[in-house]
Image 1 (cartoon, helix red, strand yellow):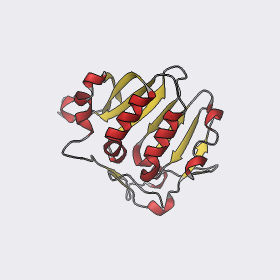
Image 2: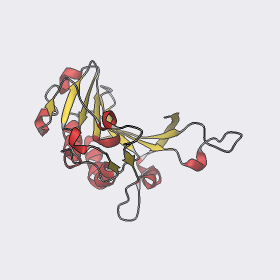
Image 3: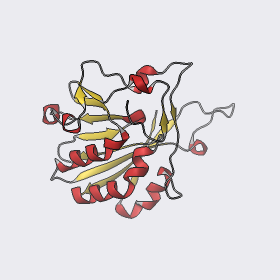
Image 4: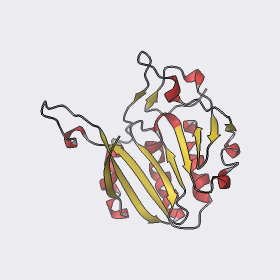
Length: 198
C-alpha cells in the first residue's frame, strides 16, 4: 500500500501501488511519502547546471475574484519560483523544507534545469511527474527506488467518485505552513510569476 502524504487522504489506498508509466515526454509515478525526498535528491544529482525551484499554492480565498452574487466563480493558484539555484542550494532548500513540502496536501512543488528545461513536480496525492523532451534520459529513474513500470498507472484520482472523494489539507510544521515560504525565501529570490486558473 502506498505511504500517503500526511496532508492527503484517499478512500481506497489499497488500489494505489508504487508504479510508474512512461509517455511521450513525461513519466508519471505514484511515490510513497517516505521515498519522495530521495527521488528529488536523485533528480537533482543528475544536474550540474543551475536549477530552479517551483511552488504552486492555491490562491487565498480573499484574493479570488468574486461574482455579482459574492461567490467565487473560478479557483486559481499562485506560482512562485526561485531561479538560478546551484544544486547544492537546491539540496539545502529540500533539506530545510522537505518535510513541510512533502506532507502538505494543498501545494505542488518541484525542481527543473534551466538549460534542459527538464522538470520534476510533486503533485496531489503522491503523484510525481518528470517532464522532458528527452524522456529516455530517465528510463530507469524510478526503478532505482523500487518503483516498477506499468502500462496502465492507477493514481488516486482514478479511485475517486462523488460518494468517495479524496481529501487534501494543509500541513503545518513548527508552527508554520507552506504559505509562509514566499516571504521566508524572498531573500533567496523567490517571486510570484503568475496566478493561473486551476
